[in-house]
Length: 228
Ligand SMILES: Nc1ncnc2c1ncn2[C@@H]1O[C@H](COP(=O)(O)OP(=O)(O)OP(=O)(O)O)[C@@H](O)[C@H]1O
Ligand SMILES: Nc1nc(=O)c2ncn([C@H]3C[C@H](O)[C@@H](CO)O3)c2[nH]1
Image (cartoon, rainbow, N blue to C red):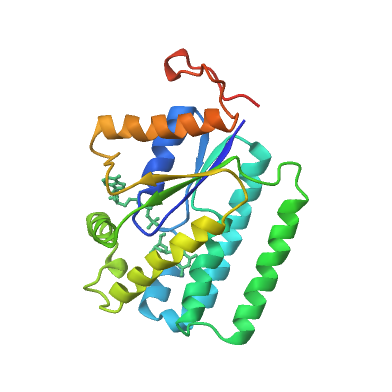
């Protein structure tokens, strides 16, 4: 049984790959709450006022998701609690949180991570990180079309997105909750190209075999379930 968490910048393709991967492996997807998130539009309209509230909202939903995923042990998560502090720290660094909010956030996060430590399965089995350039990120954000994420909605989003991309490299290097791998989200159009989709799936399957989460002779066509 396997828990895979995805990571990557806004519009990198996490939700899309979560759906493709969970379907391929026969596991259950967990999606980040976006369209039903009442705080997200408030945050984009007034980031300074709502940065802390939005983070608490996401942290809470991510805590629920990772607990359920680790208990069920057969899931793919579109973004996870392990990425939460990246967003909050970046917002705090640009003055969108008070010292009290920063201290409260890290205490809450620490308490939640300590809860996970007490679970029978404590960590995911694999992190799949999707790398994208700024140009790809913007193209995908435009394609998806959420109004409040567009550069035309707020010109300062260009700086925000560029800064966000810079935070990912050190975050990925430091991440050590599970084995990890990177996918080139600029190179592979796993939405439109079947060939690209298979290449990406093959890369993930090879990594799952390498870390012992799939038998060496696993083949999708034989439809064998992921081993414990
Ligand atoms: N590899 C890809 N090639 C081409 N288009 C893609 C690719 N991945 C995603 N897309 C498209 O880009 C848009 C954003 O994708 P998606 O919603 O999966 O990103 P995300 O990483 O989950 O974003 P967010 O962080 O905002 O939740 C969608 O319109 C999707 O169809
Ligand atoms: N501030 C902030 N903190 C988070 O943890 C976080 N996670 C996601 N998002 C924003 C990015 C996309 O617009 C949209 C979908 O990913 O939600 C976040 N924003």
